[in-house]
Amino acid sequence: MQQTIVEAIDQVAEDVVSLNLRGADGPLAPWEPGAHIDVALPNWLTRQYSLCGDPADRESYRVAVRYDRLSRGGSEYIHRFLRRGRTLEVSPPRNHFPLLPAPEYLFLAGGIGITPILPMLRAATAAGIPASLVYLGQSVETMPFADALRSSYGDRVRIVATRQQGRPDLAALAAALNPDALVYACGPGPMLTAAEAAFPVGRLHAERFRPVPRSFAPATAFEAVCARSGRTVRVAPDESLLDALNHAGHRVASGCREGVCGSCELTVVEGDPEHRDDIGAPAGRMYACVSRALTPRLVLDL
Image (cartoon, rainbow, N blue to C red; front, side):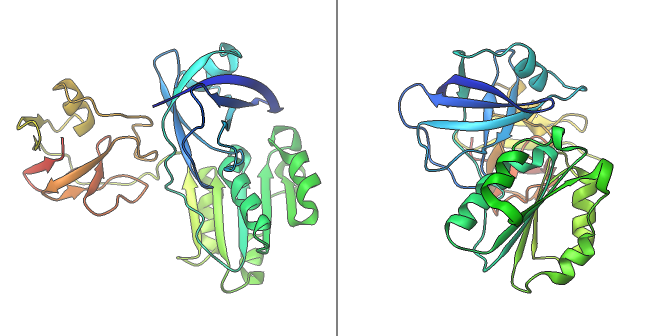
């Protein structure tokens, strides 16, 4: 973990604040567009936020947080109680939403989903790659960084206030797109579902706030063998691998507990995991908060 100091808290839209987190002990870990960090809050919660600043700035990280009226305690704490000067621990950046090389980009953002898209648009245009952004929100007042985007990028940015203008025609955008262009989208579930219907598989890269509802076979018990300690932990049908390991004294980091942030990644030495995450675990890895086992036991690098 890295120690940071809350250097600034700025209102950037209705119910949205940005935090500037300066490294307390010197330069912070590097990152690339699409990355996020875990922020350990003083109320014992850990939350994930996309980095929306400049990757060239090694002295500070910038994130933006929308106040959720159904908050589980994270956004509420930041909006109501967090103050300048507070020290916060943050993880090194992780990136499950990297910007891949392409001759052209179309970026789609909905509301607070602009945060990972901002550095992507900046990187593409700095490299001289054609890029455009369609940015949706209920009203301009609810859309963080809308004015800055318009002033910096002009007609490459299309701001769509859906209460007045309705939703854009994604099928028309897809039809007009360069055949080799990639589409990057982040925002609410309905927007991403519409994007998945409009753009070809393989050209659309999306990041979700919440996992897609899916059905799995009933959970069964299995054993998790911790290779380094030699201990075996039984995972009951009604508990997660993450909880079973933590209860047994193996402290595994966690954040979202929904299979979308990657905080609880583990290395699988033997056995077949049942992947239930929304990230797409790489070979030999699994996310302990939601994923389970297809074999009676898993051997983990713990």
